[in-house]
Image 1: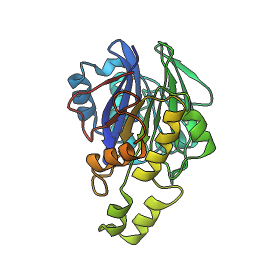
Image 2 (image 1 turned 120 degrees about the vertical axis):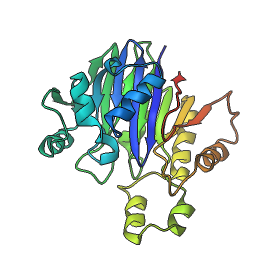
Image 3 (image 1 turned 180 degrees about the vertical axis):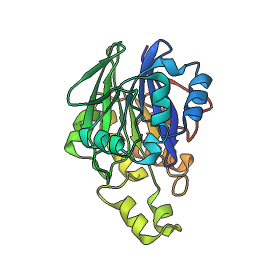
Image 4 (image 1 turned 90 degrees about the horizontal axis):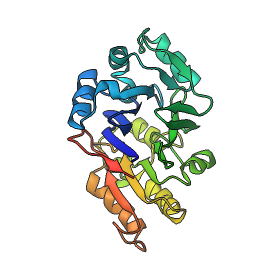
Length: 260
């Protein structure tokens, strides 16, 4: 059965495993190798379970452990051309790892993985859509300032979507961040707010998506209960745990898997 393990998800580090104990993929490696290995172990997975790493973009909370963890398992690393070139230039990828630009669907462990562009203030940024071995679709989509037609098209038809719900707008605007950082986060190439996330989820549930995981929450400008409540209010005409399932990806895993 298709499984997604949100190992880490916040502004401080991101990593998501999709697959089973026999093998799967890791989307981002934004924490140390030690933390990644510990999180995999908690979920009864091993580093060797990771058969490929897919990078969304080059920011440190998505690639912090890439070089060390990648060298440990010698698996291929996929991403957008500009992201990979930047990471190689900055010595963030071990020479042990084959590096491959993702231009079409990639087959790994019976899954088909494809990328879609996301609007973010990085050299390149993407999300990933996965067709699992048991013929289900899921997507991981964080770090984007707004929902483009390409993003919406990639998310439609998925049974499960892990979608960014980065900040509560009131908390951000009244918080301690400098104005320049607030403007960056609020921009069209920044991050999705709880309200923007909720609006997109409302569209997705109408098209048949049932499982939702809220991701990449800001520890400073959001709270899990606030993000959850915002989405739940947007879906008030639907019955939770019947029409849809909703969870919040943990900042740091203590064990948890979504079977969809």
